[in-house]
Image (tube, rainbow, N blue to C red):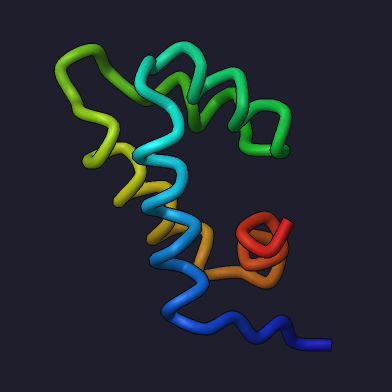
Length: 73
């Protein structure tokens, strides 16, 4: 069964993460608890902003059914 998510849901989820987690460590902890790979989270270098990291994360999540399920969750 294909998971269908709307662009609006993606935008709302993205913006909620960006605004809810002011600190990188708090966001990392949340992402780990949301089944985002620790390996992927470890690629977040200190010189990259939350927005740059979330852009890369959400781009990747939208590519697979499993990733879309994570956004829905």
